[in-house]
Length: 83
Image (cartoon, rainbow, N blue to C red; front, side, top):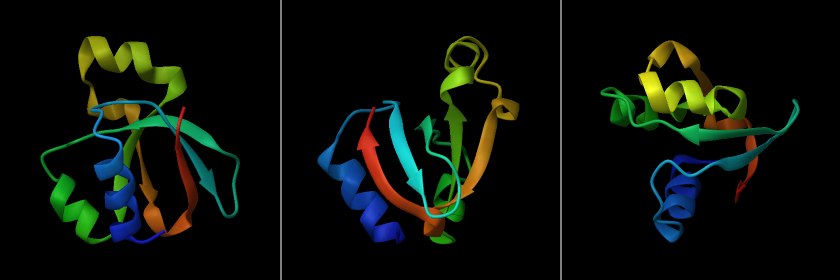
């Protein structure tokens, strides 16, 4: 997916930190939350996003530890859906 397609998805779903099911071209689906880090706009310009997976939701809510995030390339996304 392109940056514009991903932005369009989030503008249509105005919910902050909502779990999103991400489908990929070459790997298993991931459910996670897109994280707004200080470098979010810089990464978004390159079509990269930091995502906290479903397994780490509770820890993330408590600690906001960026080590719980993984970075994904938006070009590998095939579909986004609210989980």
